[in-house]
Image 1 (tube, rainbow, N blue to C red):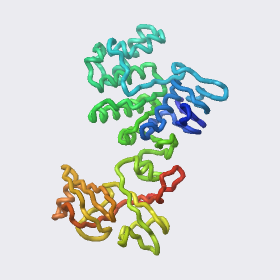
Image 2: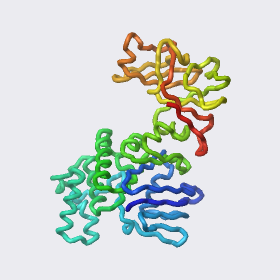
Image 3: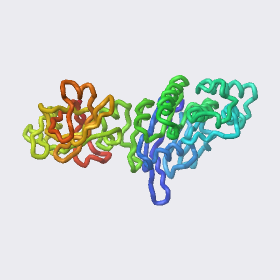
Image 4: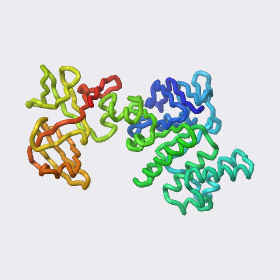
Length: 365
């Protein structure tokens, strides 16, 4: 079983503390993503699990085996932890064929030649490199080289795979293709994958669960992709997980006000007081007249399938995405500098200044 258990992990570099008291459990057989901005400590955490670095305090267990314990001095080397690692830069040897690159860990382990060949070819087939095993890396595309790195990690049949931004160097089409292949491999082989990235789209696409980290190395929320996106714990999560709009409102005596105007939003805040209304561009309905809040169209951009508007409400710019067919239907298309009305079909309420781990966010569908 490749359950990963981290307890009270602390790691500093000089006076800079990256992780401070972090605890986390990653279940066997799931694809778990550490998602956060650059420099938040997610790669440091992966390196601690892999054994490339040692925490200043805390314990790490893989399955039933404690691999790191700061109190006893236990610190197993990476090759004794039963895991495979794939990095962003592929790290394939240019002078070796695909077969020899993949076979390298088995040669180090002195696996007999017949078994070595069988296992290498099994890994070749698992990552869809059949008939390419005698090519050099220079004869492969970027996506194929990344598959070589995956196969080399898989050939030792580890129960745990650690993937550190492995798709960053690929173009958009290859990233999309490879993320689905990684997810399919995880399901088919019943292995645990810990995936590290700052790319929200990849995290949402491949994960069973995600942990969102902030710039201070704190885990702000853990949940399924749907939980994270639809019910963010605070406004940091909401901002990080895609394009977001915020509008300050006040709520008193059952009236919602935005600046000097009463706002017919239809979805009141949880309690009276000052609130931040959060919404995605696709959660706003835009019209020439009707209920909602008054605004001015500052930009109208035709993007083919969608219209991308920038609407100013009480001096605050809000991004609005509208289906092109809806925008053109019945002369509803809006022009720059035209007054408009905005309404909401989903609202996320946050307290002003809520960007802290202890903040409370409430979502109203």
